[in-house]
Image 1 (cartoon, rainbow, N blue to C red):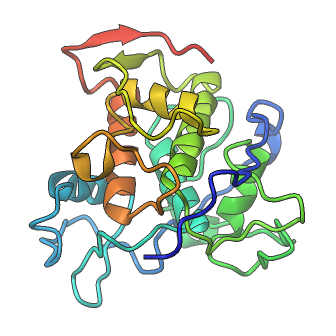
Image 2 (cartoon, rainbow, N blue to C red; image 1 turned 180 degrees about the vertical axis):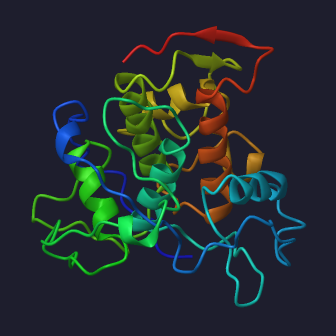
Image 3 (cartoon, helix red, strand yellow; image 1 turned 60 degrees about the vertical axis):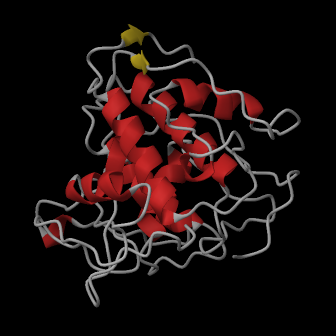
Length: 261
C-alpha cells in the first residue's frame, strides 16, 4: 500500500459547466484501464472469487464500466486506482445514462474514425497523446474533475476514497442538469462512519451512503470509511456500479427522492 494522503489534501473540484460547453463537447472516447477491454463475454477472473465485491466486479465489467487484464485473466482488485482511471470509469458510467445537455463520451465509439483526440495539453503534465487526455479534457470542461493550482492534473496519482465520492457526487450533478435522471433511490439511513467527523468530505460521504449505499465501510465491515485510504479497484467498481444502478432506478422497491443539488 502507498502512504496515506493527508486529510488536508485539496481536491480542486471545479464548478459545473455542462450546459455552457455543450456545443464544444463532442468527444468520443475508447475508455480502458491500462489494458484493452475484456469484450462482451465477461471472464471468470482468477483473482476475485474470494473478494467481497466479486459479484459487483463482474457486473461492472459486464456493463463496460471497467475492464480486467486480458494478459492473465485477472482483475487485480486490490490495485489502487489513479486519477485518470477514475475519470475513465465515471465517464463510462455517464455514457450509460440518457444525458441530453451535452454529449457524453461513448465507450466504445461507433467507429474508430470517430475517436476524436485533443490537440493541446489539457494540463501541463498531460500530453495530448496520452491515452486519457481527451477524457481529462472533457471532465475539466464539464466540471467533473479539475486539476491543481500549479497547472497539473497528476493523472497517475492514487485517488483516495473521499475523492472518489466527491467525483461521483459531481457526476450526479452533471447527470441531473443534463436531464439524464429523475431522482435518487433512498435505500438506507445515513451510515454513521466513525472517522469522518472532521473530514472535508464528511457531507459528501454521508450523502453517498444514503444513495443506494454507494459509500460503505472498508471491505463492507466495521464502521470506518477510511476517507484518506487509497481507492482500490474492487471498491471503485462496486461504488460506481451502485451509483449507476441508483441513477437508473434499478432498486424499484425502495423510496425515490429528488436530488437536491
